[in-house]
Length: 147
Image (cartoon, rainbow, N blue to C red):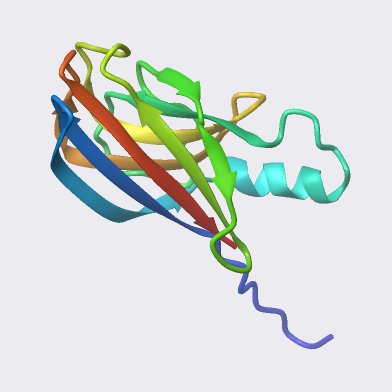
């Protein structure tokens, strides 16, 4: 048998915009980690087991530790539905999301995650400097998954 090399490397790109009283105060675009749960979900999708596999929610949490492929949860999770999907290029899906001023106030947000409909963590990104979510702060962005 000829040697086999696994070149299927998924990656993610998280774009975040932070607004205070409607004025943009911070904007970042950063790579993120696709965790093992994503590979399992994709394998099951390929086999036709589609129930609960699609990305449905974005989660915000408090754990600033470095992401690891074995991560499976977002700490002190607050999750909300994503806004929609688009396909910017071949093999890419962009997931639009937002966190309005009326939700999740009082959290020091250090982590972001994408969750499938069955609650599986698909991707995770952390930050060293938290976003202190208050009633005058809204956050919006998009998460692009590249296959």
